[in-house]
Image 1 (tube, rainbow, N blue to C red):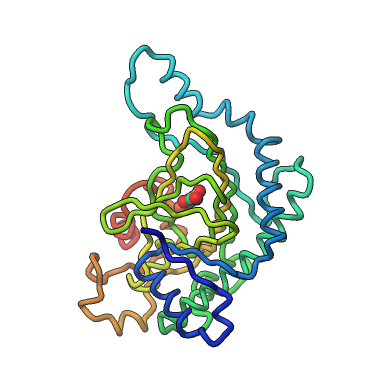
Image 2 (image 1 turned 90 degrees about the horizontal axis):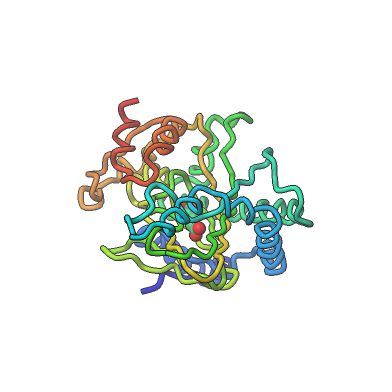
Length: 315
Ligand SMILES: O=C(O)CCC(=O)C(=O)O
Ligand SMILES: [Fe+2]
């Protein structure tokens, strides 16, 4: 089984209706799908891969060797007998790019390339949100406005890019590359490795691979889209497996609400709700401030989302 691959260029042509239906299906039935012909220039994507890999070699690899998971692994391997899996760690190297934080300073072309990439992928995120508006029967711009709070500058949606590498792991049976979770926020656009796999989603009781597809963008939706859509678009569990060969690169961009934004099911979708469509939570989703959700998520990222929804409904 493979996750859907959708040709985004067909949206602008006569197959628009069919493509919109595929995108709706991708959000509703899968929560994860891949876009090809998404409009981000190949030439830019090639540069993104190059500068991120160079950055890892030049500015990150040494640090990874001294990181907590590596130390724990070395201790484990030094023991005479296995004492079991490493708890509470992921076999990954990560840093986050925001408009105003410190970026890796030494890699030639990194800042220029990643600035250009972030602008492109943010446009794609906004386009995806408009598609979701339309497919959900919401007014155009609804999701973006909800994520941008009141519209003031300090209410602006959060747009972050997480650059991850998952270096070769001596014992992939002892540690995950990234523990299973659903994403907290809104729309996630993932540019994953062309070759090295490892990302899996949980679907119909089994883990299935998100197959590497050269220069595709993987889209998935987070917990806030689930709330806003009143459960029509569910966030999906996913994880990354460690591998003993290959250094997997993945660049995830998150379009999330601002911390001050109020998130709640869209009223249009509550009124339309019919019992058959309500899903496992009986159709009840709370109204809360995204910042409160994130405080809970920080503690509970690798746990089921339902207790998080319950906890914010009490705030
Ligand atoms: O590295 C990946 O492919 C997935 C990363 C991810 O799930 C996340 O950052 O939330
Ligand atoms: Fe994730």
